[in-house]
Length: 242
Image: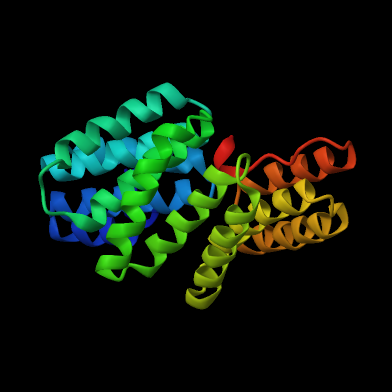
C-alpha cells in the first residue's frame, strides 16, 4: 500500500518527500484514526500496519496501537482491542498529554459499554467530562456526554436524555455531524423506551441520511438494524453497545 507516493496520506507524503520517518508515521496513524472513525476499518488497519512498519518513536507506536485497538473494538474484536488500548494507556500514564489521555479514556469507555460493563465505563467517562471541561475541549465534552447518556440509558432514562441532548447540542454547534448522528441514535432508543416509536423512527431516518451523506461506512448498517428492530418491537441497539 505504501509503495506509491500518490497513495500516501498528506502528512506521510510530505514526510516521504523529506525522507522524514517521523512525519510519515504520523501521517499514517492519523489517516488510520480518521478511517476507523468513519467506519472504514479495512483502510484503518492497513494504515496502522504502514505506521508500525516504520518503527518510529515510542509515542507513535503507542498511538498507532491505540487506533488499531479502537478499530478492533468497532470490528467486534473486543478483547484484542481493549488490550491494545490498555497497553497504549499504560505507556502514556504519568505523561502530561491531556488530549491524548482523554481520547484513550473515551475509547476505553466505549469498549466497556460494548461489553455492557457500565461500572468500568462510568469512572472513565466522569473523568473525561471533568478534564474536558477544565481544559475547554468542547468536542471531547460532547463525546463524554454522549457516552454518559448511553451508560445511563438502561437504568436512568430521564438523566440519560439530558446527557444525550447536551451532547447533540455540542456536536451541532461545532459541526461534528457524524457524532451528532450517533447521539441521535441514542435519542431514538430513549424515545422507544418512552413508547414513542414514531419519533424514534423519524430520528433514525434522519440519522441514516446523515451517515450516508458523510460516507460513514459502519454506522448505516447499524441504523438499518435499529430500524428493523423497531419494526419488530425489539429494543434499538445503542452504537456504543455493539
